[in-house]
Image (tube, rainbow, N blue to C red; front, side, top):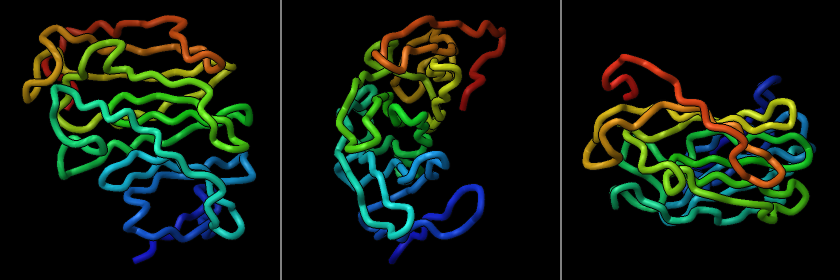
Length: 193
């Protein structure tokens, strides 16, 4: 079976990818000559770049760290309802930023996909406390990278810790270093599913 990738603005077909190799495909990046996407196989998290006209793979790299919060799930998915390749990548011409549901965050060079920097948000800030797979997409705005982490304040299925906070990260897209972390105060209990 084949999956058709369409341009998010025009709806026109961009490429066709084998479902067995591609898994869940997100969207392409409109300003780039080549479309980028996150994908997975049963054993790998992939960052891919496809030629918009032919659908040919321009580059593809296994980028997953294998991190499993609380030892749960597999290197590519927490459960059988979703996978870690759900967030959409973002690009600004200088880099393509990929974020995966296990917290893997990285910037790759658009021309060949070589890694500029990488980190894992769950290793940095503790395991997320979420009922389902984390799937927030990063945002690039005025040369800053923003990543929201909305989570419960209680342990979920043995993952995370009581008192976990919801927060917004501002990251330097050149280095991958945190510029600031803003906690979102709330009296809500168990607000993030």
